[in-house]
Length: 338
Image 1 (cartoon, rainbow, N blue to C red):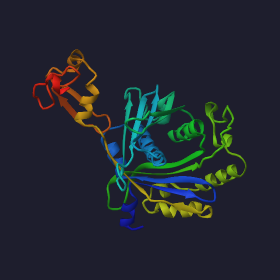
Image 2 (cartoon, one colour):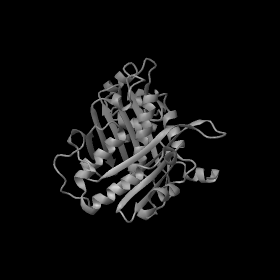
Image 3 (cartoon, one colour):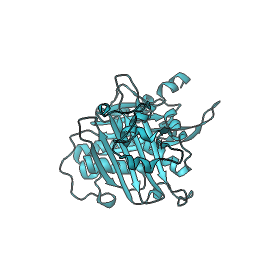
Image 4 (cartoon, rainbow, N blue to C red):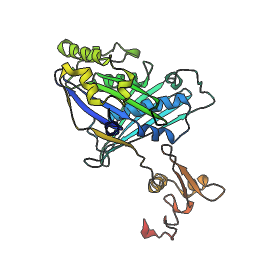
């Protein structure tokens, strides 16, 4: 694989369809994106691994939805790793990249560096939130944490909430290429049985915690096709998933050539955060002057930090809240300014 080919497939999501099996899918490669996401923070190794897995899942899931604005993946638990949150922003126009950001909250004193990362989330839930923008009602689907990995939680989510059999094969970690420094590389394949899947799945699933699985949803020829595609995906190797020596198109031919794979236009992905001073002001506009005073530091400023990208903002407290006395530029605020 040439250097130019490697660059062409870095940070992309390639949609495909298996015409003989009625299955759709995605191949994702996150390289610079993942480096940018994780370089914003100094996470312990266990937290890094979970954020990397969540970001990769988000890239694969976000591209499957006819998204106008934002898809969010959230994991919350009662363990040392409390929150993992990612956002996928749809391209603003044709040809533009999608954007991803991610963040985690954890208790460093409770974190066990020798324990399995997923187990340190504890009991909690896995959620997908879809916001199509102004004038729409956000959608939220939740499933309990189960099965020992975020990948398995995502599979359970689609089976339970959408009754769509879904499978993920993921690989991620730090990598060193010849002549280059160490960097994060990640890759994955998502398979999903296309609707209509049976709407008459059993009430009680056969999975962990009674959740639905693909076996509870598919039967007959559909079930056979799904099982065959999964057996083929089981043969994938980590280095095929993350590259860079195997192109996604080559991987699909190697895995699924008998299933008649058909590819569509790839989607570029980049790191991106939507935070801004105006957004912070808007979030603080619901507070009174007394509330703002409680937020003010001894230096006479109100400060805010973006959890996703680390951006730091400072404000004059008199310019904040619904009782603000000044405009953002420092000029006196009149009643007509509201």
